[in-house]
Image (cartoon, rainbow, N blue to C red; front, side):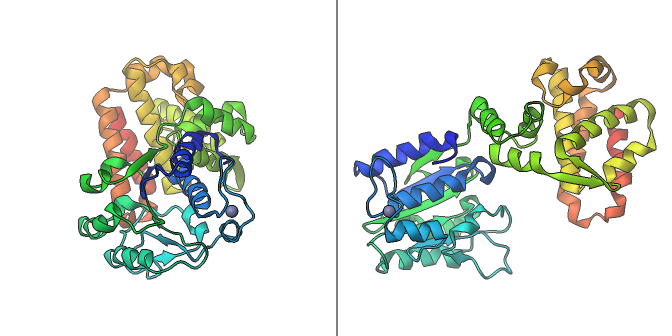
Length: 348
Ligand SMILES: [Zn+2]
């Protein structure tokens, strides 16, 4: 167990498993960036171990060895895929750490769960099925696993992983034990980043732009972004955009549009979204020192409050959301025009 904020959910599973009170169907709520798949990995390892006890898995048995190597024949992972992707079932545990939020969980793969669980196991009489991104199951697919999910065969475990319980059908939800890692204490998250050598002054910004998901924040803070042959850390980029954002509001300086348009689309959207949301919070009288980005330009607090209207901020926010939806259809050279439009809406 390495990530401290997973300890509670992990121990809850461990205690009920070791005391034979465990349900065979589990739903885990959490994202990749919050360590949901680290938790799955640890739970599966404990469950499959031949000598598990209070201290966790033994790390010596055949099962532990196979899981350490990253694949186990008695573990099956149903992946969400785009429709053209055929490799939707695997026992390679490492694919769990890939961030694939797209596509669907295919019904033919879900139908396969029951037969997999009923077949005999290879190592020690146990089997596990994991459904990645279970919120991407269609209703028909979810219904196809209901019966197995309600009563799995003996020594079998089914784990659904979802970014939110609320995205699953009530019939599925009511049949399982639920573990959530959605609400990570801010102190634990900050401490984790600090332990991983993220600079103290960068931690708040990295967390704010990751929706408080510590692993995602760590990745972001390690990002190096090159603009005009110059390397920046992600936090430096955020601070730059903040200052340029203010400059454009005051002077409409074109170099601002030029710099921001050179950032990758998803990064640009992420930063602009957060700036707009923080200004909205500022106008709703949240103290600037509690706003990770705006606290860096605190001297402009009054300017932002006086010059931007609530309605325009909402409209600019909506404009960004629309852009994200239309992203694939917008030619990349339109990014400057889109940025100008964003600022125009903001200043109305
Ligand atoms: Zn073991």
